[in-house]
Amino acid sequence: MKTSSNEQMLRTDLAAAYRLLEVNGWSDQVFTHISVRLPTDEPAFLINQYGLRPDEVTASNLVAIDVNGRKLDDRSPEVNPAGFTIHSAIHMHRHDAVCVMHTHTLAGMAVAALEEGLLPLNQTNMAFYERVAYYDYEGIPLDLEVRQRIVAALGDKKAAILRNHGLLTVGRSVAEAYFLMFYLNKACEIQLEAMKTGRPLRIPSHEDCDFTARQFDNERYHLESVDLVWQAELRRLDRLDATFRA
Image 1 (cartoon, rainbow, N blue to C red):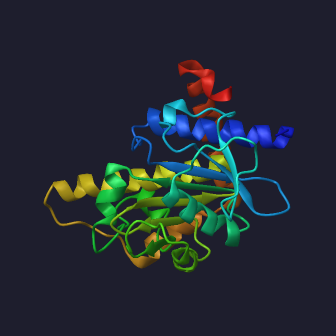
Image 2: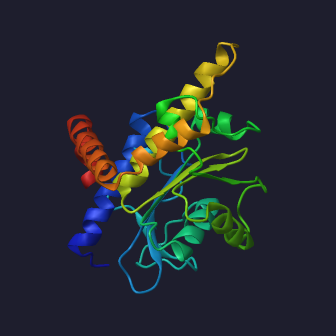
Image 3: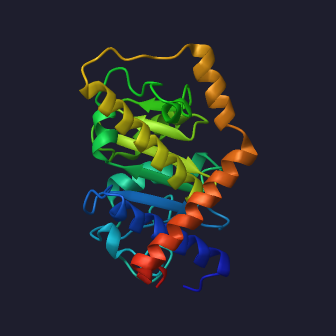
């Protein structure tokens, strides 16, 4: 399958995101998945081969697949069935979701198990104030009929907590989905550290939380932050191991 320069860039960025899962300690062996939508007429996306660890993913070994499960090249590597369900659902219905990132981090899974979900305990957490969707657990998402419910639960939000499961972010680029996941996971870590103290948790007023969230919503500030973080992470990966580009 021939690839365009645009697709090659998407492949490189997606492979970088997989490597960052490993670098950040977010790997769940072969069960973590990130996807990026391809610039094709019909909805299709790239995702990792099932069975590869994040540190084994490269730009060239990503799998191109459409939302019906049809592989777009001559190879026939498998993809994670549950991952296919989640990612195809969002790529089918959210045209702004160029990248979909789903993780099983320890902090994310712990907060996903809390009835109250994510609390606005810190400035980082407030970036997600009233901006996180919640999807109730229904078992491993192997049945394609759950796709509509996943999309309905996510709505127009860019971040979600899959209850009793993990975290999910969507972005207009791999960089944005990664940026959101980094800080959503950081917010979960902050909450768990605060809860460990056993002391009463101080939650600021609705007005303060809402004001802070709207500050983070500033488009120019947000996009500049996303780009600065992503370029810094690419430099870090190039220093550590640039084979993700292969």
